[in-house]
Amino acid sequence: MKKNLQTKLLMSSAPISLVFLFSLGVVPPALAQGVPAATPAQTAPSTSPVGTDNAAEANQTPAAPTELWNRSNLFGDMAGIRPWLANYGVTVSLQETSEYLNNLSGGVKRGGAYDGVTQFGLVVDTEKAFGLSGGTFNASGLQIHGSSLSQRNLLTLQSVSGIEADDTTRLWELWYQQSLPGGKMDVKVGQQSLDQEFMVSQYANLFMNATFGWSVLPSIDLPAGGPAYPLSSLGVRVRTRISDALTVLAGVFDGNPAGSDGGDPQKQNAHGTNFNLHNGALFIGEVQYAINQPPATRSDAQPAGLPGTYKLGVWYNTQRFADQRFDNTGLSLANPASTGIAQSHTGNYSFYAVADQMVWRPGAESPKSLGVFARVMGAPGDRNLIDLGVNAGVTLKAPLKGRDNDVVGVAVGYAKIGSHARGLDGDTGTFTTPGFPVRSAETILEATYQYQVAPWWQLQADFQYVFHPAGGIPNPNDPSERVRNEAVVGVRTNITF
Image (cartoon, rainbow, N blue to C red; front, side):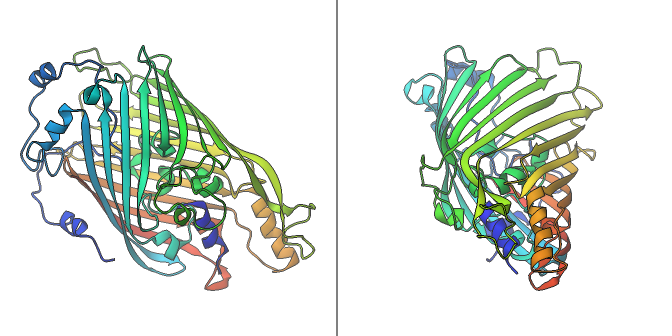
């Protein structure tokens, strides 16, 4: 959920789609499974070597399964349309994610909400399309529907769903990527969503809470929540593969994907077509180190150790940011003598680290494996509502015999209220509202099970518990008490067409 929505929540004292109904139908109990897909996620650009002979490749590749429960897409090859387009380097994708969430206790009120997103994408390999070697063009859009349980019932900082957003149809990403000679570097230019490449944790992607995707810290601290789902920004990203193990990402993007300050950023950029370059700049860099990665082909020797990926990054936004406690004269904003104009700071920044590590599997060829992840981010406490964000968890793939692509996991997310925001709460209690609660931190605990019905279909059961929603804010329905801890259950379905 984007920053302005969170601010509204903190300061305030549909029918279910046919796809969702279909996906909850009865199916055969023993079905072939596929690799779980990220949600939301775009179709990845082709990684085939430039100049691969299509005919030879086709002769060496087994025919794709055509049976309904074995093929990778619900619609299969679409009567030959998909392979025909692939001959010209064109890949089309359509994916529907729908979910129903209900808070059984706590919050400002109880109840449930349906929300969903349909993602459509087009990827063009320019080598196959018209002979431009090393190029990839990508366009993707979103049709977002339903309502937000986090906004309506919970008032949480860490939204219980990563797909909650305003109802609309919008452009998401529109970019061109070019690999440079030698294949060690590529450059991407255009409208981009940073949560597709930066700060990403492989194992955290299983979980439904938004903080395990685009973390709560940038979502709250950056203007409009930063260039991440459902928004994006114009910019340039450079990726350099220094070695098989070491990769460096760096980019510069427009500083505010909404296009202007104030108001709901998703309404200010309602259809994703505000192509701005006048809102300051967001610089971001990330170093990635991978160990014991599987070889490119199964015939190559497998690494002796377990795979892992470690990342260090930093971002800096050049815009000005309001102090969370003091006005432009140095008085507390809660002081009746205050000017009411917050002190202004030049720039904002954060350092972060991400770790994904497989810690156990019975054997190199076993589908069963245990993975852990951790991600920590810090930012200055004077200009940010959140100055520390931490999440960590554990996932088990193939938890049951015969369920090779099911995944079960438990994770925790922690968002600490910044020092100046806490100070303002204390000042409010001193100057105007005796006993006003001082916010501390919000913690969420999530347990989830993702069931792979077929390669093209996943079902996911989920439970979340929120401690101290929004750090412990007063309940707008009863300011004498804080918003109570929340228990949320949900089910999500994801279908790849």
